[in-house]
Length: 150
Image (tube, rainbow, N blue to C red; front, side, top):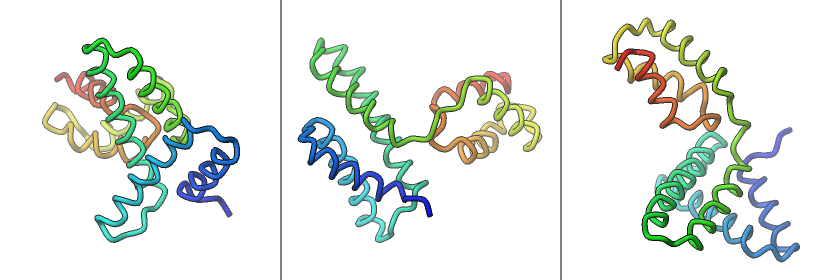
């Protein structure tokens, strides 16, 4: 039996407490709070795919914050956000290589039968389903757009 992602996060929180790793503990608690908030809001118990979605959203938020902090000249906050991203990425599955992403896009385009940019949504939905947590969807979106001649 495999351990759920939520259970893994809880176990790593306990380990961070024992090791007195305050930075890691803070990031893990933030992730747990975001997961719990979504569970309470939607009155459901999140599965691994939904937990991955929450973590991906947290990473995206931090990347946006980094851009703001860099423009404001706050190197200390940029470093903090980068450290949190690194810790959160540990919960994501292994990232696909660019070649694997290209192959996935080509297969999705062929499967959907997409010939123009108008069908980008169908292709994106299929790729997103197959590469959940394994690729930066913003970059994938740009690649799909280029492949469809957009």
